[in-house]
Image (tube, rainbow, N blue to C red; front, side):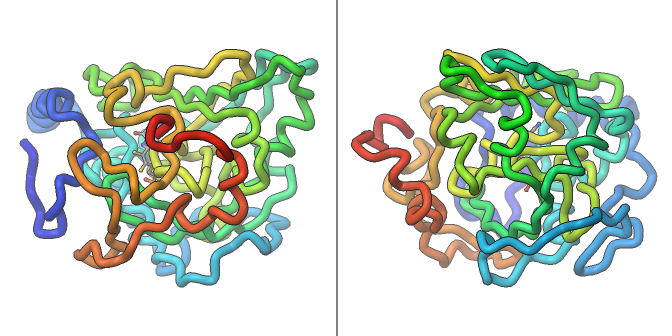
Amino acid sequence: MLIKRPDDTCPSEITPPEIYARRRELMKAAAAGSIVAAAGGLSSRGASAQGGGLAKLDGVRKSAYSTVEQPNTYRQITTYNNFYEFGTDKDDPARYADRLKVKPWTVVVEGEVRKPRTFGIEELVKLPLEERIYRLRCVEAWSMVIPWVGFEFRELAKLVEPTGNAKFVEFVTAYQPETMPGVRLPVLDWPYVEGLRIDEAMHPLTILAVGLYGEVLPNQCGAPIRLVVPWKYGFKSGKSIVRIRFTDKQPKTAWEKAAPHEYGFYSNVNPDVAHPRWSQKKEKRLPSLFATRDTVIFNGYGDQVASLYAGMDLKKNF
Ligand code: MTE
């Protein structure tokens, strides 16, 4: 059932209507007890405005790429999430995602690279970690400011040495039917897959985040490792990544497969390209209830990234 909250004055559901209808089944399954709420989500355990009481990350440097805007609180960032593997309501990930099995965790990096490798998460958190305070603009017209901790994607690429055929990068995320109630339904073509053009992936703003507010990521935010691409709509940032493939072909992303007329490959934040069901001109900065802020092209990162799209028609390549 689509519950309209007062703050949902615009049609702020990412899900195409035909897919959204299927979530009723999920809710029924939950009510029947086949989905057991994990006792106390991570977000509620030891949480303060600036942390969740999770393990601290070492050696984190501040970054010149951070916005000076005031970050959202830890609670706001960890209780209003999209992670459809755990349900389609905003509070489902905080309620159910602590079942996600994050240990051991490996990320396979393969495809058009000279040195394919499987990395343990322990190796990845030793790459140069920075705190990057970025704006996140969701396609549903809400936004937040989030102090991620992560390393630049290009640092990982250096280790595997992409070949000249690497034109795109595909990000495949975890598929754990035993912990993820959402994947029992064909809401999306699981596993959730995202993709970037190689120059987008190698841009210094593109990070793989392993932390939030100086601590390891809470599960609902995509533990233990997720993509963050601040000039694109939030859905480009795949959570809980297990496989990264350098490829010569443009990957088919989960949202493109579900609704290609609504979610394009690029998905750059653009107030001039409306979603077919709502405008992208304004946004609400959570926890505000009202979409009063003007949305800015490339989410305000235009100085750094507009040149990647020089000469491209951004209405066609949405
Ligand atoms: N990654 C996976 N694996 N599954 C998802 O459902 N949702 C996307 C993206 N990454 C999603 C995902 C969407 S729609 C958004 S807006 C962001 O994650 C939200 O990230 P946040 O919940 O950490 O703010």
